[in-house]
Amino acid sequence: MTEEISSSAAPLKPLVKAGRRLSPIWIIPLIAAFLGLWLGWEYNAKLGETITVSFETAEGITENKTLVMCRSVKVGTVEKVQLAEDLKGVEVTMQMTREATRLLTDDAQIWVVRARYGFSGISGLSTLASGSYIELEPGLLPESRREFVGLEQPPETPKGILGLRIKFHTDEARNISPGSPIFYKGLNAGKIETSTILAEKGEIEFGAFISLEFAPFVRENTKFWNASGIDVQIGADGFELHAGTLESLLLGGINFGLPEGITAEPAVEDGATFELYDNLADTKRFVMSNSLPYLLLFSGSVRGLKEGAPVEFRGVRIGTVNRISFSYYPNDPAHRVPVLVQIDPGLITSLLTESTELAEKFVKDAVQKGLRASLKIGSYITGQLYVDLDFQKDAPTEHVTEIANYRVIPTRDSFNPVELIEETVKNFNKTLGDYGEDGPFRQQLLETKRQLDDTMISIRKTLGDYGEDGPVYQKLTETLSSIRSLASAIERKPNSLIFGKPGVAPPKGTPQP
Image (cartoon, rainbow, N blue to C red; front, side, top):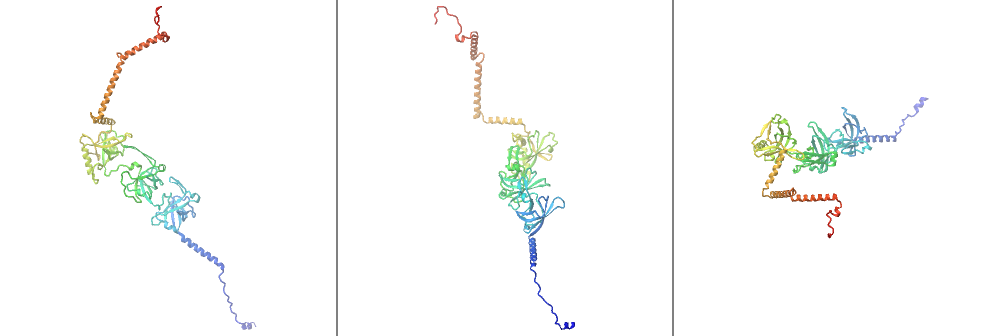
């Protein structure tokens, strides 16, 4: 029966229903995923290069917190801080933005901005509240760079500021340091930026910045000198006192300018190097274009003669005293003092500078004609001496000799104060003689002498009147005798001054007058 029912029934058909649509709840994860992808792309799109900067210390730097700024605009963030492999500093990894890629040039400068106090002033006070940050100063070169050495001190002037950047070389820094001002005619024209020790030369190199408006005044022959403190120079020309501005006295400073009477040469460009003189007097140092060394042997004392003293010919400087030392001629039997000088004969005659033969011949001929060297006082206040070259009248013939590979110019006796006095008296007498017997000065002297003679005669006559045989003496003797008599009478009878001197009584009966 069961089989009958199964066979007679109609075949079964599958029931097909439409599937359900996607649930709306999936929209939220899809949007979140899309936003995540978009934010990730946006973040990666803004990321730039990763750079590494070396510092001596990580003071004020915190991972994932310290910002990298360029002129108050965020350009990166500190990503990692770790010790350097040599343990001599730290390495700071910074994630820069894409916009900062063009700032990472080869000459870019990076330093930590924190509160600082120094000679150049106070800076970074805003970091006391906001915290330290890293400043990036873009350079000017087109080459890019990814590893830098950070500055421990911020640069004095950013590279982007227009102006002139030059260098100074000096043997001693004295009071000059980064931040010291540079003056031109009393105006602040720039400042010192960097200082470096050149070990191979034993010198100090300063990098300096000159403002754009003062850059045209820096010429190839411009002189720069240290204006720190008060400079006192004592030499053969007397005293010289120079003092800078109050700012340079306190913080140090440099002055520059052209020497008097010097024509300005072309202006310089960035990178020019100058010598930094110790003071203003050094900028006026005597310069010779073609000098010759000569040895002078003085038999007397040379006290008062200093290295650098001038060598003059009739008041015109033609050389300089280089050194005073017995080492130039130690075995001199007369124990004369050797003085090495440099002279430039071209300053007193027209000589070719290409060769020294003509200059040597000129000096040789001059010595044969009486040219001699002597010491003279340059300043009576300081007692400084200088070497004077001049022709001596009736001088015996001498020649330029050679001792210890030095040519020797004959000398006169060293300076003697007695000789100076005698020469002064001689010149005074000569001046009086130049007036002649008929001159007005000579006549006045004779008239004065005559008046003095008459006065002496009158004095002698007056004194003669007071002698024992003179009338004045006799009168004084009589007067003194009368005074003595009067005094004796008063002593015997004091009332004689009232009643008179007692005399003989008149006879009785004689009429009284």
